[in-house]
Image (cartoon, rainbow, N blue to C red):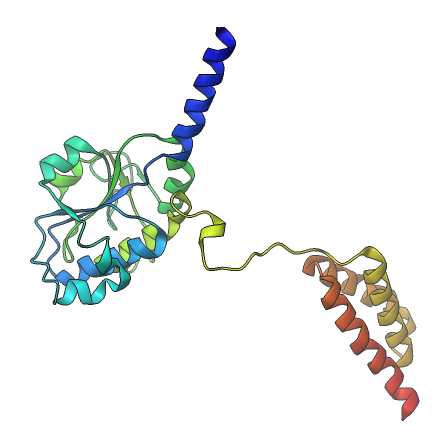
Length: 261
C-alpha cells in the first residue's frame, strides 16, 4: 500500500512538472494595433500561446495587428482573451514589466525587481497561472497598477536610455524566457554537440606545426613558447576530426612548399 502510494505521488509530480502551463502574456491598454500584433508574433516565435488583452484597440482582421502578427494571426491573436485589469490580477500571479525601477528599498512599488534572465531560472520551479504584464507605449504601467502586481521585471539597458518600445520589451523578455516553452530540440538551430578529435590526431597536428616551424627557420629559442601558445589555442577550440585533418593537410603543404622551391 505504501509503495503504491509513493509511486503514484512520484508519477503525479512528474506529470505536473511536464505539464506546467507557460506564463500568459498580458498587454494593458495598448494604443496601437500594430504593437499587439508584434507581441503576438514574438509569442509565436518563442512558444507562448495565451494572450490576454486589457482595454485593447480594435483588432481588425484586415488591419495592422494581423499584418504585424505573421503566423500568429492564425492562432495566438484570434484566440486572445479580453479581460479587465481587476480580473487579471485576481486570476494570475502577475509580473509587471517596466523600464523604470526604484534605486533602493525605500519604495516597494518598483522595487525589488528581477531581470528576465532571473525569471528564466526561477519560474520553471513554480506551478500556478502566471502572467507577464506589459503596459502602454508611452507610459507603461502606472504606479497604481504596479502597486497591485505581485512582482516586477526590468530589462537591463543603458542608464542614459533604458526605455524600450512595447514590442521590443515584450520580444526581449519572451526570448529570455523561451526555455519555459521550447526545448533545444524544438528550435530551428542545429545540434551543437561536437566530438573532439582523437588525441593522436591532435598530436600529429602539433608535430606538423613543429615541422613547419623548423622548415621556416623559426628561431629555436622561441619554438617551445610558440608551441605552447598553439596548444592553448587549439585546446580551447575543441577541434573535430575533420577540422584537425584539414589543418594537417594545409600544414603539410605549407611545410613541403619551401623544399619544392
